[in-house]
Length: 174
Length: 306
Image 1 (spheres, each protein chain N blue to C red):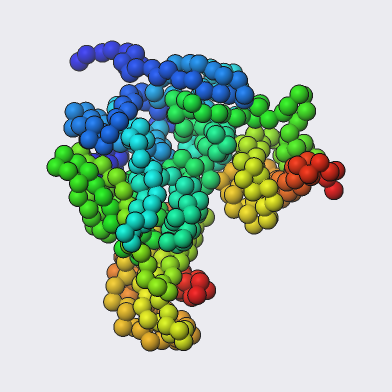
Image 2 (cartoon, chains in turn red, brown):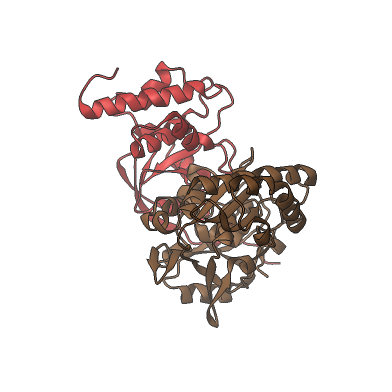
């Protein structure tokens, strides 16, 4: 039986993409997941590994504005795209309205699901600036939380939606 | 015929065996369907078509199947186009559920198909997973095929000997089993126009990631609100989604209330035809009850469309 280091046999794929606004060039093994790349190669550990089978949403990142399960999204697929992780939300040391709302509304306890929740919420609010409670629940259905019971998360998203709409209009949020 | 069922560890696509991680593989990126077919031929049993990977990569992570070569079918241009032409809605196999949900073309000609896409799994799966991949994976607990069945969808397949078409009911042959042979690729799903006044509804239920039951109803009412034609498909309860046959005479000419009164009888017939299996979603008896409830709800939802 011929033994060889399997990992060396399969060609790496050169990729170029933007992560949190910064251009990046890398070479990735075909089977490397975006989650592993983000956490291990880029040392951006805000994105969490939880179920590892795309069910729980803790690993949610945005690729070209769309929420994906980074645990089941191959890293090479990010080539030519814009990736946004939780670390990329705050600007000039100021938290994003969604992050601030989660704090103000107590939308987390242990915090493990929270980066995924916030990224999913961002993709929702970017697409639907004024979602109904029903729409929020349906959209966020795939992000699981074992601590909060979800009520405070929904309220945080609603408050963030209000603030973001107000920011757009240049007025103070209620 | 397709090799996936044979490749997956016996019995349980939900069972985790060992460490959850992807074992190494190579990626191949063909620029045409022909080239992709050629790769399937050359690489043989160690290769598999890969699109969104939302189902394939999961079973590979769980160690239930191993492929050393994944053929990235997304590299082939124009397999994710949606168009309406000559009376048929044509959806490319690489169209994501999200694209199907958002497509104005789909919403106009087959709103039921846009609606079922909206409910698949979760938002992340919908953004990445493709309708073609979903049909080729053929997990019994899935949504799109049930609606496509009731809409008389036809799939387009490309292989060594050229292209062929197949009604969706013949394409899905069993759990994780399709009519594709090892060197064939699903390229498009074609759905004929609904007739005038025909409405399609889909109701699903379950508390797990995948649905426990899905019922599609295709309904045509006459002006007086009387049934002119109705057809049901049941998904997720049996080994494959199935159209329920033999109910046309039962419902023909009945108004809504009469039709609802006939649901228990229709549900019994549906149960006999589908032959649900007991699995962790529930016992046969539980599914029999679900069929009874959701057949009626799907019917009422279709009526509500009118």
